[in-house]
Image (cartoon, rainbow, N blue to C red):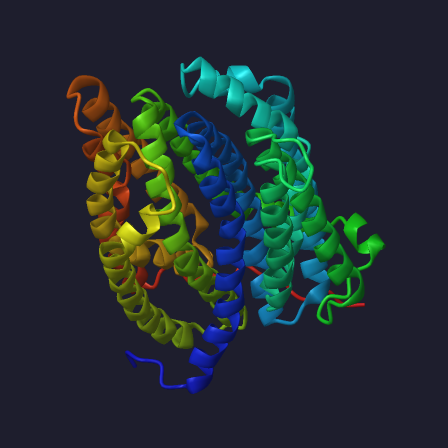
Length: 454
């Protein structure tokens, strides 16, 4: 059968996807609020914020490797209703989260000027960004714990807490941005420092909200403090076995993001500001796609964990059509709506011209990215074939994206939009790989162990 006819499939997809999409939109709204408000201060602050967010993004990318392994294993165990093994996964994933966040927090607090200096040689941007990072450094671990716990809840189909958590964080962040960036309500004008402090406080409130939910309101796992001390060598082995390709793949993307920012960072503040603005729109449009991919991943893990492979084949075919349709809709949104978005910024004529050319690239790229991203992340990776995604990403990053962008900038002295197109070229090329891989159906693998007995 090519098309899923069971209405409950679409109902479950929507019920899972909408809260995750809204959560992603609101979470992104925190970054968007920073970006727009700092955008009123000039190109140096917005460039500094862009680099600061990219460095933080490197941390998020690496953390996503841990979280992906958690979701894949936990959702498959959820398909068997094996909550004991899920608690083991969560406990070990939290330990791995600390291992990931501690080094990044150390660098951001003690060596921010050196770190930012690897990306840009502009002294004003380095000074401004280092000030931003030093304040946020302590919150990295807090952010990691919150995200890990939210992923744990998501893997057992508890998705609304993420929406509530993000809504609270957005409200706190926007209010504090208004107060601290511009010096309103009697507070001193702190500009970029104010944005960092606002985000710092919002992170701690996020952790408090999710911790209260996990302790008092979660009906599925009912985790208590002793559960966070659990240690299962077999589960640790599985997390390392199946999670290592995921974490290695995310490390590849972290290197990719760092190198991309370093390439753009040496093309001048106008190009850097342009990338920040266009990238903000790109990320905003993608939050819905990644929310749908996350929901797809949960359903994929649950279906495969239950051993329903034929059912999964039909679902995969249907989901591909859905992803293509969404991609075309988002491409049209960029085409007709980018002028409205740009009214939020005060732009120099040179910057505006660069942004206009990059927007044309984005119109094309986003349609392709909306297919291959959810296919590879929501189906192949969640289906258990984690090594394939790592190999695929590594090839395109180091053999296509970074070499082409470096050559275009350094040797060809190409226009900024050409460099930008090179940086996004994998989004188009990976579509062909994704189509062949998905429809081979060799990515469906049950990774669970037998249920524990008393």
